[in-house]
Image (cartoon, rainbow, N blue to C red; front, side):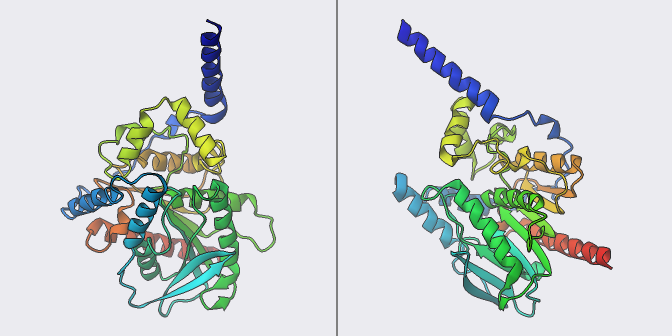
Length: 364
């Protein structure tokens, strides 16, 4: 009888700790407003993208553990092989001890730079895997794009990847594709996990405003970002069946009580899931640079995006949210054959131009 009471007491302590120490405040007041989607309906080409996504999910077959992760990493890198690099220079470089590559449009000014932080659930992805995005951004925005190969889990701590992004940003300010040189215009962008790291980075930069040689980015772009590592957003449940890429993961997460998921996230990341380091939406969002967030109405992270933008705007920061009907998670990576991808990059490039124009006018 005593051991039953002991177990019940232990579970009560674990539940209470998760509720009071790991979950964070209710953010449902930031679920509205919701902008009208950019498109009226998904294009016919989106069905081929869904097929590719399902094929990617099956790439690891019955492999388990490290073998599965290695297979998925190779499959993701394969997405960047054969990408058209005409009119671009691809320059390998070492940044603060980490591999990276410059993607530079011919004829561009090397003082206009963008740090790109790839996605991949913090466990996969590389500059190669995300060339469909970095090459499009370089061409459309006319910026020299630095794609960072930050340290991945589980081989490294979650904090290691965060520190790599900070170090890369510092490096970018003083180094361009042709060597040392001060940056004029600086942007940060990332997708999914990389969107999370992007939003975490600009908040850190704001808090380091007095550091010598460190300046805030002129603007940031987050594509389908994870903003809440407590997984509290309603779309984590409501969009499970509509999201062919992340839905299976969310379905597995939703099988467990939320308090257990919070403990698992804490143990895995070694950072409390409601800490703004890993949940940018749960931090102070005032005094941030202009930010454009793009997300799909069909993905499980749509409410992560909506809540971050609405909270940032409530805090007075210039944040914008653009959404699309029926797109897969980070549809921008699927290239020119997908009209919505082309449309998204046009809008990202327009955002860069608007931010640079506004900054130049303010300086004048």
